[in-house]
Length: 270
Ligand SMILES: C[S@@+](CC[C@H](N)C(=O)[O-])C[C@H]1O[C@@H](n2cnc3c(N)ncnc32)[C@H](O)[C@@H]1O
Image 1 (spheres, rainbow, N blue to C red):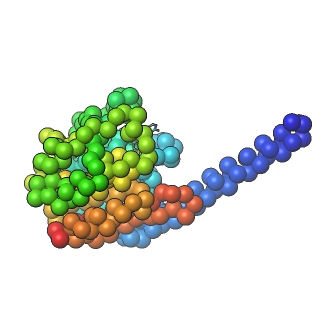
Image 2 (image 1 turned 90 degrees about the vertical axis):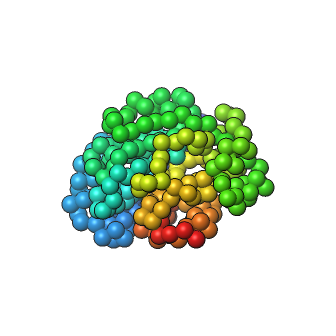
Image 3 (image 1 turned 90 degrees about the horizontal axis):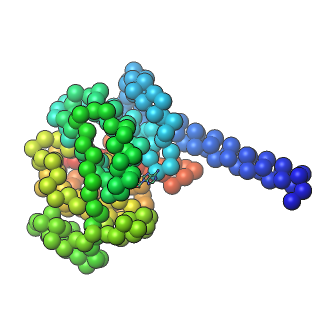
């Protein structure tokens, strides 16, 4: 390749990268504006959150939850009348260090439990944890066949059925972003149905996040909160609404990427 065509190629790549970054910044700005509007946020709360996040904001991107999603969680917690909130995160990562900071700074939060299936990723994530309310747990990802998934959805006792019939997904298969009917082993989780729950569904890959709804049906109650990441990748919202009456507090779908999330409040069971 001549040096002129190499320079042209580099310039093209630089331009593409700049366009991509600019679009992402524009999306982030309108995401934050929407969260502020939907949640009627006082500017003081957004400033407070910016300070809390500090340098960590630079780590956001890739598979992590977005700035607006964290802002929605932080401000909802700060404004709530609830206390003793048990945060539970499915799928750890950059988010865990930010949720750990939120847990440390909000007295409304009793605990943060985060589930991760990849031991190396878990060890790396563990380094970023500072707050003694946070517990990072290794859990296998389990899965069931299509027909068994329907049985779990319709079961009188979904958690018991899940623990009997679901099989461990081999480690290399867990990286498959189109994984079917998979969810974590939730046996003996330290989450009680007597205190409020704030659930963050950001794992596993694929359509299995909906299994959280039958599996947590009996612990879920009025006022609990559910944030679903990648909310439009599969019919997660429809599945949530087959179990619970919910109100959508806020959410955002990026125009220039596949990112989309929503935060719901449980209003009752169906
Ligand atoms: C959607 S990601 C979870 C991301 C996390 N909640 C966050 O916001 O940072 C689902 C799974 O992908 C894996 N994962 C996430 N980020 C990763 C990375 N940067 N490199 C390798 N694996 C990653 C972890 O096993 C995680 O449980």
